[in-house]
Every structure is written in C-alpha cells, then in structure tokens.
Length: 491
Image (cartoon, rainbow, N blue to C red; front, side, top):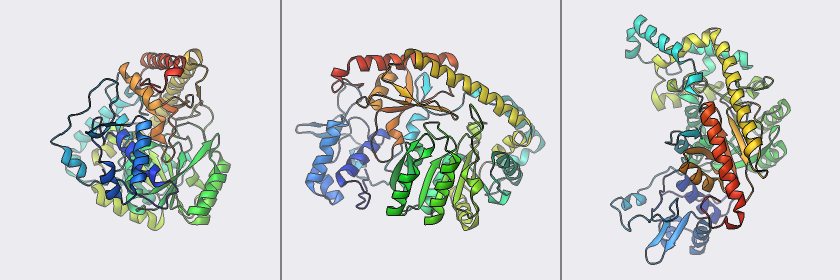
C-alpha cells in the first residue's frame, strides 16, 4: 500500500492518510478483512508523527472503514454486519509490503458488476446501437481484404478514419485537420496519455467537483495534487477557479463538457470563454472531455471550447465508442503543435496504434448519413428513459431527495440528506440486485457521501422502472429510521 504525503497539497497530513486508505478501500485494492500496518509501522514508513497516524486511523474507524481487534490488529471492515474478519494470517500477507504506485482505481469497479439492474456505468443499451450494421460491415471487410488482420494500423490512426472524423468534428463545431487527430482506445486512453506525458509528482491539476471518477484515478496515479472547483448551473465556478489559479498555477484544468459528468448540466459559452482566458493567462492546458455532446434532450449544446482555441491551449477528447460500438474502443484526441507531437510519441510507447479492423469497421457509418439518423433515434430513445426516471422519482422518491434534470448525457445526479451515506446505501441496493455509482467516487478532494449517480441509458424500461422503485423504497426506509442511522449499515 503506497501512501504519498504531499506537504504542499493544502490538506493536512492526517487527511491525506485518511483519504489514501479510503481510496484503496473503495478501489478494492484493500479488501474486507485485510490487516492494515500498525500505527507505529505506518508512522515510521511515512516519516510522520505517531499522533498523525493515530488521528487518521481514528477517523477511519469512526467512519466505519476499519475496525480494531484487541491483540490482533486493525482490519478493513466487512461490508455487512455479522461477517467474520479474515483469518489472522494469510499466505498473501507479504504482498502488502510489496511497493506499488497505484493509489486509486475506483471507477473500474462499477463498469462490470453482477447485479441484474445496472445503473452504475454510463453505457448505452446494446439494443440501441447499430450492431447489425457493424456485423455486416465486419464480414465485408474480411471478405474484401482478409489481410486486414495481418497489418498494423498507423500509430496516429487510420488515415481514412482521421479524414472522416475531421469532417465529423466540424459538424460539432471543432475544426481539426486529420494531422491534428490521434485515434485512441477510447477517451480513457486519451486521458492516460495526457497524464503520462505532462503530469508528474506534485503537479497541480484542477477538476470540477464532482467530476468523472476515471479522470481522478488517472491523475492520482501520476502523483498529481488535485484541487477541485464546484460546479453550478453554468459549469465550473470561474471565480473560485481564478483564485486557485492565482495561488497554485496549475498545469492542467480538466472539464467534462458541454454536458457535465455526472450532473448533466450545460457549460455556458460565457464560462467557456472565461476558462480559456484563464488558461491562456497562466499558460496551462485545458483537457476538454466530450463523451457524448451528440446526446442532448432540448436544444443543441454550445460548441466545445476547442472551437475558440487558436493557440493550442485545449486538448480535446471525443468519445465515439459509447454511442457507436463499445467493443471497438475508438476515441479521438485533438491537439496541435509540440503538444500533439509528444502525445503521438506517448501513443507509440503505449500500444503502437489501435486495431485496424476496429477502425475500418466504424468508418462507413462515420462517412454516411446513417450516422445522423442513428444519433437522432438514440436521442429520442434516451430522452424517453430519462423522462421515465424523472417521472418515477417524482412519484416515489421521498421529499428529502433532490435531483438535477440533465440537459444531455446519460446520467442523473441525485442528492440525499447530508447525513445519509450513499456508499452504505449501495450495500443495501446490491442485496436487491441494484447497482449505482456512489457520489464519493466523483470527488477528488472533499468527501461528499450524500450523492449518487444513476445512469439511465443501459437497462431497458422495465428494469429501469424496477430499479428506481427499489431505490425509492430503500430511501424511504432509511429516512424513516433516521434515529438509528449511526448503527444501521445502510445509513
């Protein structure tokens, strides 16, 4: 277990130790029943006072993450009451002392889980994707050119696909020559390439709060100091961003736009301009992560910030896998100047290029009018599911529960009473075959446990209705038992 102490991070060392262990537990890197290092050993290893570690462990125990057993040690707490701790010794205990540099990997735990009702990951129902079209195209490609499987693609990406996506991006308001486009294994790889290339230990990255948890995982893995700025109905609070930038001079500003993930709100053009001006003034990079700007439920959103960028301050990430074919893992990274050249080198080091077959498979759809027909139908279908969830919440949710109406994207952000912990709520939901993303995964700094993200895009209407009703029953039960919430496992 690797805990990095950053003495200029703005958070106390006690809080850093606490947060690091919480991240390990939420990521599944420390499982229930695992024995933690003793306070004395942890103090010696981290080079901090015994009192500092004692305070961190005490806070972890108060928040029900760990438990101390007299004469045996301190253990990660079990998820359910009544289960036994792991055996006192294990043949794998030595592995805890084997150094790693992976401080957090929370988001991956929610991508593929066994629960029947999957509301945790913002994927699109396979029945809404053009799968049959891709099946035919796949067969035709192999028939016309069987050698496609024996060839590497260009590291930058297939030239035909880059030409087609250049035009596609133009329709979204982003002008990018094929030479400025790098084909990636989804936007997640784009994030990883940027982080590995430009972020080192102690570099400051500013994110929204809340934000996409996969980005937090990547930045934490590079040893970044992550500072967060709250969002409102227009996006990241520029007044607070300016204050942070004046004080810390961040290297990167990460935003999810035009539809914020996880709240679904739209960043206004005014905020876009202000954020770009800040980045230009302090000479930092904006990472603009656009996973699904095509999925809007009212008017079309503003064009990305990249449209206003004429000096290379914005690295634009565009996801295509989610709305077309997740199995193809196709994303776009747009950058210019030496920034692009260095990211190209990072891509070469990572994998020498995407699958040529996957790129050729999606190419005909990108080039044809069928793409816009598909997106129009997808917007209609997902709006119906969004509206179904909103109607069910209005009918069945307790009055203490609030939510934001997403203007686009695939998620709904729900806020609980401040005393209710969504992580504990998830334990109860899983017993009833329901899964969602607890809001704690979306906060890089502060611990806000009274939110959750529901993704309404993956399961069908019947399962969606069942899941929302189950969630509302759990919420009613929790609120009615408020007086017991400190002892009950789902409060």
